[in-house]
Image 1 (cartoon, rainbow, N blue to C red):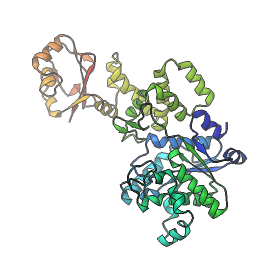
Image 2 (cartoon, one colour):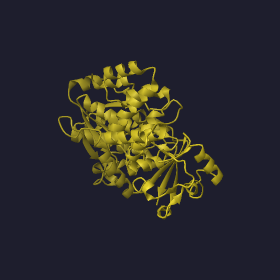
Image 3 (tube, rainbow, N blue to C red):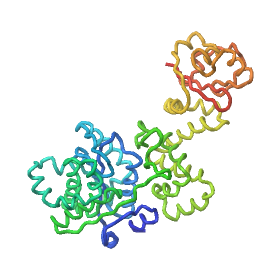
Image 4 (cartoon, rainbow, N blue to C red):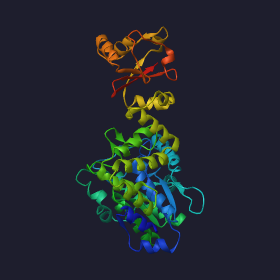
Length: 423
């Protein structure tokens, strides 16, 4: 299956320039997507474009990842209703270096179709403003640039010359990549169409050559919200910003109406494999979500991270979870649990002389509101420590009850789970 056919069955083709299929079929092509490092990590929204590069590579072509060391310093007005807040150079450089390492997980950087990473700051670092105005600024008219949606949509609310010039930078990027790397295709989201076609115009006017463009639809959720967002904010590809558990839960909790689009956009399974999975599980959307969540969690994080997620999920949601599964957990997994249920920090010295169970439930935490309630809960066989039911009001908890010397799981009934953390 060629690249355009691959995008079509996945619903990932929004627009393209004429004759691109013939161009792609005539030879191995080089294509690129730009990423501005305006955030500390890439998000799952960025991953739509990484998937585009990966599919391009799997179709027998060579991808270029263009990191926006220059364009990130200016700010893209596309899709924005107000001026971006400029980041410091140090912050942008730090973001760029981190994101370059992230990208290396998702593309092949060896072999015949090996990916390339380029920083577009290299195109501009030795160029002064007069060179830019003469060599770049003269190519397009103000009328041409103003006809683009990214500019038109900001005319009423205000657009600085800085952001107005972004279109020139992105267009010149394409020209430099065409000239230096024979890169003939630029890809991106549909909101980038104006900037991308400005690049094809640069190449036509300045190099007397033909270049091509491909864009994907902007992926949104059934509720109209921007893809890649949850109630807690962005879904990051960095485990320190979005834990593998929360990443996995994003897909598990997806709206059933979004599932078909999500699956087709993000699976690396072939069309035939996808259709078989979909047909087999079409009446079980939760199973489809689990299949997709497993594939993406393993790919973005790791197989080990996925297995850790399953352990945490088992503990939180399976009423039949055992003490054995609790005792096998790591500190990182307990910290994930702490982010999902009520947790209480207690000075570890409280356990040195022994801590009465009633005092733990009432004075050192708010698991129960009174000693009377605590006694009643224990009498009703509702309280468990580390998955072991408690029957003795006078039970003393020592440090040996702390898992990994730090954690203790307390349950009051089947649904109420709490984590004690000894500090």
